[in-house]
Image (tube, rainbow, N blue to C red; front, side):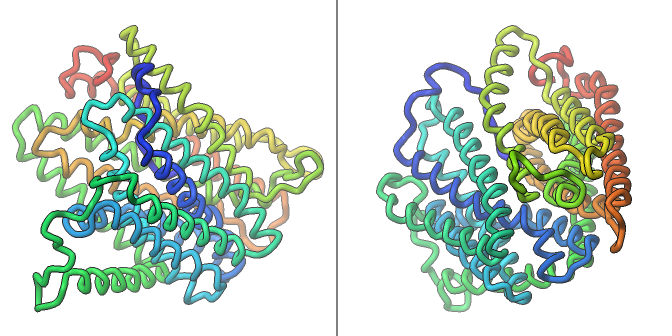
Amino acid sequence: MLPHNIPLLKSPAAMKSQPKGFYLLFLVELCERYGFYTAIFLLVPYAIGNVGFSEVEASLLYGTYTALIYSTTFAGGIIADRLLGFRAATLAGLAIMACGSLLLATGVKAAAFIGLAALLVGNGYYKPGVSSLLGLLYDKDDPRRDSGYTLLYMGINIGGGAAALGAGLLSREFGYHTAFLIAGLGKLLAFAALLAGNRLFGGAGAAPAGRPLIRTDFAGLPNLLWLAAGTIAVVMIGNQLLFHAFAAGEIIAVICVAAFGYFLFTVLRLEAESRRRGFVMLMLFAFGVIFWAVYNQDADTILLFIGQAVDRTVFGMDVPASAFLSLNSLVIIAGAPLMSVLWFRLTSRGISPSDSARFAIGLVLLGAAYCALALAPPGAGGLISPLWLVAFFLLFSVAELLVEPIGLSMVSRLATKELMGFAMGMWFMVHALGNYSSGLLAQLATVPDGTGLAGKETISQTAFLDYGLLALAAGLLLIALLPLIARRRGAKSSNSQNG
């Protein structure tokens, strides 16, 4: 799943009833994320089956698409803050993404790529808008804030789990166009619900004072017209980038490397304390790229492996391959509250592991998940038992809970004032580079046409072993570096919460 913050449930007061607007945003996020993950889970099989891409080309498309997701949220947040307001930005994002899903539903190749680009642009408006809108429902010290974001994260995973189950079944029984049509209708439902419930937010998330959207700040034309033209232009550019995924990936890689270089240049010019913390962030950014590159194989090589080499008969039913991805959401939904309680109790006793230690353990568990799947023996008919997928997703999801929630909080604690905004942006660049790298890593699991079942299993499981060993090596190296990280962070002990 894409990153979200899961804060601790710090007190019983945090479980009070939420503001009325929260329940509406919960419904909106659930419906929208269903459509969002429908595109994620079906992208690779759709590109192979309907567009005619090879596995390599489909993996590069997947890596580029998931990398570009993070590039649009930065601009979308600025536009929401300065022009639209968070409510209008959220509505605009839903409308654009609904159009994107409906274009995918046409089944026309050219329209499909424009639809994917529309999803990218719409997500750029939507994600900063809805996340900020929720925060505006609470006073600064409202104890319900943390539990609100935790519950919203669970709603996101309910939507993602429903997409894994529903999209796979709909695409198999009625075709991809039906799955994307339902996703588009879900976004339209979210749009209508948010529009109808507008009064629940009062003045929260309204457009900035002075109505800048209708001002004529440039060339005598209203800003609204420039914004609409710019949005259409970015959709067209996104369409070309996705259609030429390899070239787009190279551009993404160059931009990310340049950003890392500029971040290093900036860090070197800071005073000693800020410089030490900046070096720690750079170190953790590098490990983050490895984590996301390995993690994001779930809707790519893992999905293809399930369809090719796993016994998908469960209680006499032939289960769609993508439905098994819902195991991730189920573990997250069950595990997020338990993990929050665990960290709270450990912290209250002064023995909670540091952010960096959790990161390292997450890498080790991620590596163990892939190694377990790599070593799974074939059963009857040469197919692998689905129980191995249960083991895989259990380790995989716990790794996610250890790493994904702490990312932004880890950066916020490490970054000094002069680096805060830059560092936050860099964390999303880590995701972008990791997601693109996942498409490159996926080539290790490419199965040539005409390969038999045994050959498919061998190729895929060898690739999984490589992924697992990469994550394990990175996790063990990070564990070895924990004392150095603690010293550079100025912590008294690597076991402190901020160490």
